[in-house]
Length: 228
Image (cartoon, rainbow, N blue to C red; front, side, top):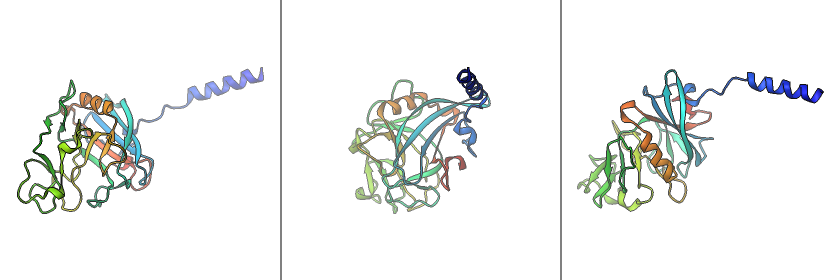
């Protein structure tokens, strides 16, 4: 009888416990739209974590899906002070300007989707006027050694979303070419990556008319995702 009473009390306690508050509802800012992607790591040194995509329904945020994520080989760094070439993923809240890929857009993709060609580069040359931009054919002031030939990463860039880090008003030396893309063999050079199936699901779900953003951060500390 005592065991039954104890079990009954435990069940009642669990039933009375409030449901966990969804991560977006604990954040300072979600970008103002009704879709959000969160990329959360345990701490700044982590190279793995979780990407979750959310829908806002009325006053509540509801999880639409999640997947294991990979971050930079050197972990995560505050986006406002990050330096280029550090192999860190910049934390912060960012827009998602457009999608691209070496493969056709997944069915249902609503984002503007640029197909990668043999002439597609992402200019990362700090001395170029095209710094942190997609270019078709390298401009004279953008060195190949300081840029990324997108077609060379057919698997990773099968499907990708541009993360708007250092994008609208690029700061030289802050970093360029930060994407949400398909996993490679291990940690990234600063991007966020997920399995191929998850990337296809994200592109089929994301609706630019709903103002999606991506928040990148950690569970706590100065780079806590709830700060953004």
